[in-house]
Length: 484
Image (cartoon, rainbow, N blue to C red):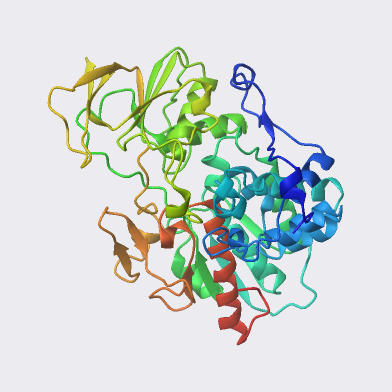
């Protein structure tokens, strides 16, 4: 829990950022790490609150034992802290960078708008553990003779593969792209998380006996039926990558793109890879010297904003159909749950113009090329308000309104008619499996992550991967010592 009176004596502090004028000149991470004593002071603020809502179910999907490792950091026991953190989260260096921190929303001190800096402490523990050599391969001492295939190497697939490898199974991970990581590598910009952190984990997993097969598009290059024949179990962690259809007139104009191809291209450039990628358009998309409009108000839209600024965009406007939220939530009405309130991402703070309660009516252009985005205000039911139409100049527009499921050209195409799918009211298609045993309608075929639950957070993917690994281990061995 930290220091008994720490929350009374120490003010909340989080890591600072490089100035926007500096950070938009590069694609590296721009967070300025806090010193060890500063991190320990923040860990000391964790109070004896009685019921730690921070670690679940409202706070942390993986149920991190936050008060415990805060206390260990406060007492300078970094090795025990990383051991505790790893007991619930395989990749705290990922979540410490890209998680929106629902744990801090659920912190008791958030009732006073000063929650413990949990995310900052979590990242510091992981980074310190690497610095001190505490993170190294943990190969299984006993091998089961069972063989498991994992389709997809995003956070769900990586977490499952690591857990299954440590349980003594022979694990093979099949990845469509040229390097492991899924959308951790190719979707999240480097300025939010540099990819050497993924590389370090992959090397650790290889040391634990996990084999990665990259550049293999399952369902096309190798059939699922072949994997089922060659393995005792197959886990499908294909993610949710098919963009949601916007249905906006003018979408075929040159200069209008879905968000993900744009982000994937830039991540491949930063990683010094060819921008051609399986499943995504390969024509170069660059925002330099252009007026950019981003349609959507979520994390993917924000990533497009930050990427456009770094490419040299003249102006970036972000359109959100939702009304502008209040600056501060009603704590007694929503705490400890995630609150709807005004939030400004680091990318938005770099100079984006934000338009709220605005609908995108049409992409307009000349000679087949985008010149503007026609918009209007909407009422509380998102219906256009007559007479409020206006046009925003645009040379480039990105649609970032979410995803509706995995690609349908590989695994789902091969298993069509055999795999039970669920389509929700928004048109998202997910593979049906519950969150207890993660079994699909096909024998010895499991699924986890966004392909099952729909687009979600990295931390939810890690949770599902871990739980699916336990379910598979239990099915193969009759029981499991992996955490649930």
